[in-house]
Image (cartoon, rainbow, N blue to C red; front, side):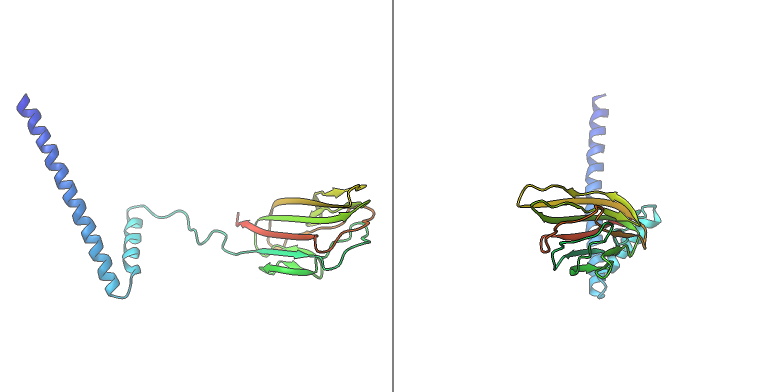
Length: 201
């Protein structure tokens, strides 16, 4: 029985040595393949070969990182003139454009139009002075979805900020109207709007 156990251990040792040898040969072989492809001025040939082999045995990649977030969309705009009078439902037009990747924002209308489907993030901030009343809402395709308000302000200056994450279809629009009957004052340089696409889904 002792001899059988000893033989079994010896067999296992031999198999381990063989495995290590095959592993080394495989590494050397792959390295030589890479060097050969590099010499042929096609460094990607080795990678392409591995990719093809993986697909043949069913290891087809299921996630294409280049397809995700394929179109960058981002904008940042602010006011150049303070607002002392703004009628109800009038859209705030941020006329100074710092960033407008994807050309989604139109400063003549104050509206952002989604150039592609996706999930978008919007952030807005506006600065008001003592006694101010300002209900600055956030609208998607004519429907109010977010409210931000400052009312009967006691501080000399106050800043109000809001945030919205929403899924939009290509052509959907986002804008920021005043939803109160009147706005007493909104400061210019401290009032801005920004947005960007988070993902394609």
